[in-house]
Amino acid sequence: MNEKLRSKPTQKQEPKKRAGAKIPSKRGEEQLRKKLKAAQEEIERLQDRLLRTAAELDNYRKRTEREFAQVIHTANEAVIKDILSIIDDLERSLKSAPKEGKAKEFHRGIELIYQKLLSILGRYGLEPMDSMGKDFNVDQHDALLQVEKVDTPAGIVVEEHEKGYLLNGKVIRHAKVVVSK
Image (cartoon, rainbow, N blue to C red):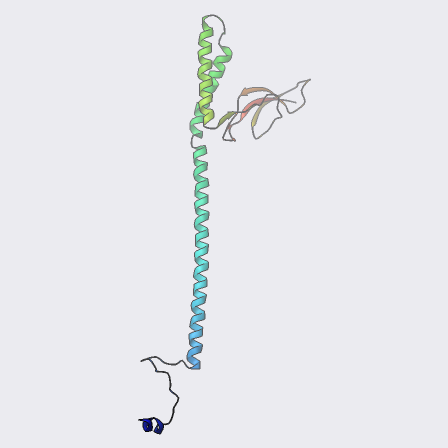
């Protein structure tokens, strides 16, 4: 047995090749590198696209939330504008009703209804504007007249014919006022 081993010359053993496996040539290696580079660029492009799409979706979600909140704040605006005429009528009746005798109780009842209505609408964001003695502001007031007032500087509201109102900080009705010259 020793003779058999000695008689065979020692050869380098090559690694066993798998069936169908080829050792890439220089040209094949170059093609594989190009394919790998193209695949990596495609991955980067798709990752960028995914990030952009996620950002667009997040912006869309935030925008729709803001718009929905805005709709909620102003949803009642038309109804409240119609109710303002009732508030005006109640204010006029309170100013003109006698406050003595039997009418005193009636006046007190109208005043309670008026206060309750303002309280309810206040919970929905309605606020009356205080205009008397303030500077005229075109964003809040509609000037009906200008009058000469000796003791009042020019541009000051001296009379209020119709009260103005804000709904959640937005003017829904301008105050109709008389302004000093």
